[in-house]
Length: 586
Image (cartoon, rainbow, N blue to C red; front, side):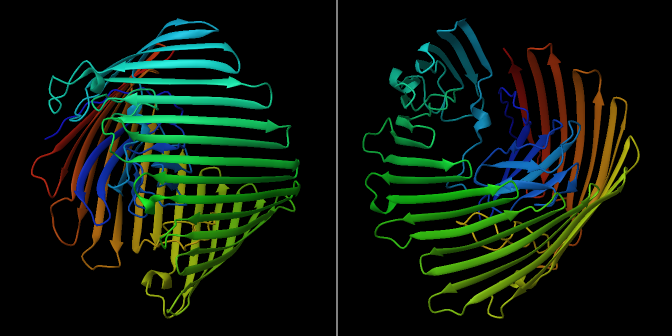
């Protein structure tokens, strides 16, 4: 059994409460079950971890499985989910995914400061007090306090310093830590040189036992230095030069990473813009870690109906085969409000493999209640000593709302691959359908169906990733019913999924949620979820119970408490998680 309580501040418009349950390690990474409460916005919503393994996620709202591209989009590196529709405040979204343990970090939400009080503040400066409490952390202090002092005599000149101290030692560190390991200091400033230049600097050093703080430059056990200069030669040319250094503060022999970058932007006219970015990343003592990158972009918009862009991305890793380059051309033509045409072509080369991709798309909106999209994409991959592989994908999708209470959407994708393609999914077609029915203002019924749903978009305009999407080799169908009667909200449903890759994979998920709004400031939510493999065992794969309580304390404070109990087939006792969130607004 495990219990953890977290305190954090959240006032972002897309903030959510996420409860984290870490399961067993999969082939690609650690499996996580995040449960989130909506706030009547589509997001983006932060997951507990970034660097999500693409294709490993399973997203559901009130138990109804959601489809990537149709219902939501995922930023795998940033660790965020954005829905295509608002996530209601009485609804719960469950995101089960895997993350890469080698590169993933907890999301920045854990670095929020639950208490930040301005002791003094004026037009010229401030003095503030900050405190951060964090439970169940075996390597850092459970409490960090700090003071900040800022001075800005003019609009282009400012100086700020923050000092942090960890008065409470953890059991792992003991009580005899030196002052250096308990403290942290940051110093930053900027100065302007008329209208043509701005110079800034930053320095931070933190002890290994320091807890998370609100200053993003403070990282336990790290020392960081940042220098930058921005130059503007009129309104048509601007440049930015920067240098950053990051090293372990408690180990002089530890690795030091350095980054030098130059960004240049030219805008000869309102219709044309050219930008270039050059960067060099280096980890001292590791020759293979030296990475030099070049990014060039040209954007043109001759008129309001036409847009063109060209990009080049190059990466050079001396002494290795990790070099890569990519070039892409992208155009959008909108002759009128009804019709839009989009074309994209790109080629990338990684090591000895060259990939070429082309796509063309058509968007038609003859009426406000009807949208139709069609596209064709081609890809060819060449590798030294191997047969050329090819793949073509033709797709069509439509969304219609013939009645005010009825919305229907669907898509179909046909894939044709060369005989030498080793991936069987490249030969599979996919289709999706969604029906949303609201016969009464307080009743909402949704049904979904998907066969081999797409796990990513084909023909991305990102020239650095011209790979074809990966299909989820499954069949899914589900139904969900949601009602709202005054302050009472009820929802429930069931969905079924069957995997084609194995005859023993057929999963059924049932959910039920109850939301009770006592007043405009107080709400209680209770939820139940159960997942079961209906072919192999009668024992549920997982059973989860959740309780959430939110209360607004006037206009300045907001309190939220959420608890969750999860029992899986691999555990004999439930795993408990709780999150308490106190927000303060000045």
